[in-house]
Image 1 (cartoon, helix red, strand yellow):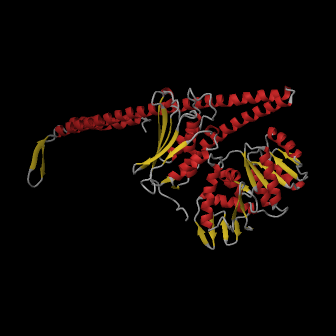
Image 2 (cartoon, rainbow over the protein chains, first blue to last red; image 1 turned 135 degrees about the vertical axis):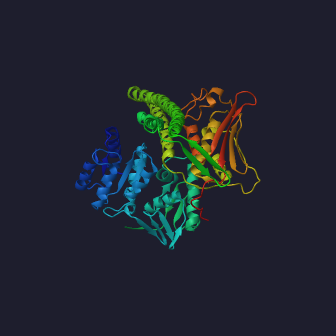
Image 3 (spheres, rainbow over the protein chains, first blue to last red; image 1 turned 90 degrees about the horizontal axis):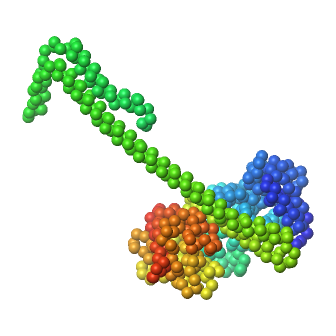
Length: 239
Length: 332
């Protein structure tokens, strides 16, 4: 494991989780600060400038969402991963809306958290506002209005099922990142499905048809054989 | 509505009381008044009759008596209906309470086993000396955690299904069933087996249904997984689809040992394990999920099973053909 001495701020009120995750992340080469509520997380985020914040959603004094909202309001763009307690679809959508860079459903494999941390750190440039906090995403002539839940291509509305739209949203907020089908399932569907990979492929086919994107010569979504998908166009965020 | 019964009774007896009061007043004060004539002319025929004021008092009394009698009958009926509704509500509450207790009891059982395994594995991890024994303990702990995770995931699916709206979309059923068969290939129980998929060639194209494709895949997959799990290599598993113009019928059939008759009515209950399913791994929520998904699609699911020749189990899903309004068109 590479010894990147990045500082992580881990906020979780459950000592069994914090006490087990912190040493695991330390062994992976990170310096870990542990807090047990949102108020402390907010203070530590401002005083210690960690490279990444891991926030549990349900916490005493201030929950993870409120903490994240306040961080973003204070123009602190430190990349953040939300640990959600329940896998409700609304909560996943909210995690994106509030500018979380990624999120994981509890219970998760600690290796999955490590993979997420590394991916987010690779993607986000320090101090810069990440795409996850932008309301309008554009790539070539494709634009996605996340608040209105509408995508347009060359100015014309693209008709998409809610799931296909959520897939597009996830890919556009994670550009140039190899996103596995399992990751998409967890992020967009919230559950693991038995016919999981096919479920994702069906939506991807719908998305490509709607975006008029040729899988053999893609402008937007590239297939990585045996791995998943990658959004290859450069994405610009606004608002 | 019927709570303030003394007010109700007063209102019911009001016409009778009014009649009696009028009778008394007339008898006391208007006895000496002369008789009068009442005429009613309807053009073709007419009534003419004479009466005394005293007669009028009796008429008022009789009217009051009649109205009060009618009101009493209605009131009595309403009371009886209310009592019946109350009994039904109480029975439903009792059933819900019993269901909740049954669920908690079963949940306790489902959690207890993997947790016991996990505790034993942790003790072994601390106490064993050799690397091989330690690895075995780690494997057992992981297995227990996987079981708990699966249980939790299925519980979450069940609660999610009740809360979020399902996606309504045109679903090509033969295509969906092909996906289920392909996905089932990865199951350990599929090894050396074949799932026959029978799709009629006519009508073509096969009628579409409206629903959430992912959820429907999950439902049929759960049935196929069960069929493979509870049968052996020499048994056959078959998925058949048909239509009768109004609905699409999906059948998942197997030639396995069948479900004991006493279990058939309970298998869709949450965490219920039939007598021949106790030793088989699973969350005990698979069929409950199937039931919930089909109900969300306005469909029905039934099961018939026989443990005697010709033995086997057939689950039948009935889904209405394009009954619901489509909110979006698939892009092409």
